[in-house]
Length: 384
Image (cartoon, rainbow, N blue to C red; front, side, top):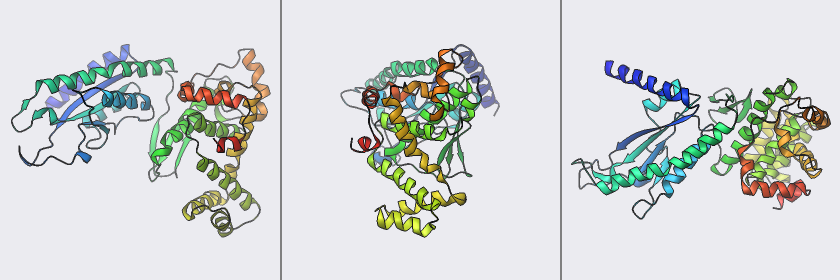
């Protein structure tokens, strides 16, 4: 144990020196694992569960480092490794060991540890003899990821370094939500892979961004939310899904179903009436109809679901009228107070948004935003 304590003490000194000069840094935690455990001539372990390179990210803040991790995996998989591409996957065999967890615990604001496990395809694991050409190829593959990592780190540096939002898995909330600028994920929550980017853009790219930007303003209302801000917030959040190319007609139909459910409960309908209207009359699947009904009836009635499409419609008109989208990210603004916001901006009382959603930089997003400026309706978005 004394050796381990000495190692971690020296590691802490080293990383503290790095952190003093670099607000964010990346650590490659390199390992190798066996895949011929049945003997030198035995069968290989199933490749489906044993990638050539396993990237362990189990202990890092995946939302904060999302762009960097994705870029690293993409660059590594795209490298020309002796005329082929390596099988690079995330959290299949390993999710990251004690070292990564220790560094993330001690340098949570600055360190991104990538636990990189190489299957021993580059050597005879029973004799310990390696193939020089393959080992050199692995080194070259890792070096090929450096430009991408540096570029991603630079993007973080260009954003506001005071951002301190966190991600937590909780057993006291349903689904996924943002509270006080932190992303909270219910321990039983699940998201289909096709909705992952949309969820990140919705929750992080909108709710966390506007919370942080509002916190930099001199008026507390822009931090906690102006009266009636919910429609603008959810309209922006749904718009983020569209600009990122992730807003499907089925998603808009679900939002419309929730509006119908809100109308039904305020009209005195029962849970069974609501379920019947969605399932039998509107053709939603039974599970979806039940979940929408349960959502609208929880806590005695959850009618906030009305504001998603209302906010989206108002936002579409606002953009068609020429209002700049990026100004809507300076805090939690309400549609009815847009006129009030303009003068403090002109007088430079309000600060420009400290954070800008990353998805706005995509070429496709700019093309879609240009189309919105010409005037689109919710129906137009459905028909895209």
